[in-house]
Amino acid sequence: MKTDTAKFTLRTDPDLLKKFHFVADYNGRSANRELEVLMKKHIFEFENVHGKITSE
Image 1 (cartoon, rainbow, N blue to C red):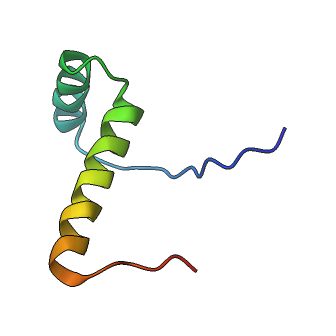
Image 2: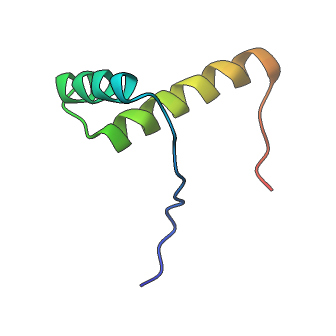
């Protein structure tokens, strides 16, 4: 089964991860979805300052 979803491993402090899960739950999201939302927001803000990032 082929998927267009990329995967990566994140190493982080266990307490930070617990708090992140708490925030994700509060927002009604999985930790994965919460991270994706934050990444999109960060990239949007970056591109507003620095210009569009082109995907190659």
